Length: 91
Image (tube, rainbow, N blue to C red):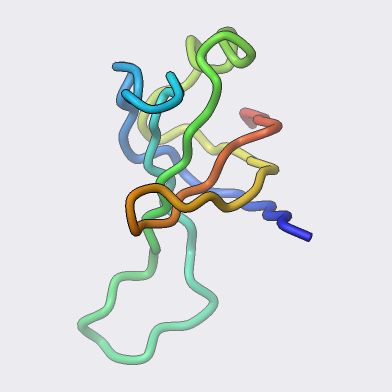
């Protein structure tokens, strides 16, 4: 089963369409449960693609700093992983 649920902070929004599937690409900062050394950041940055038509209202409400919940799945794209958002909730 390919299932992922995350809650994080919107870092960047790229509203130009992804050339492969037409998703809006956003970067979400997700807090790490722990850090291994003092040089590490407290957050991981995760790329998320969300459908521009299906989540039109959520995309309008979204801005950097918004807290967001995403249910989705992981997808491989040109040797890199990213999350495909299947459900999006802005808090």
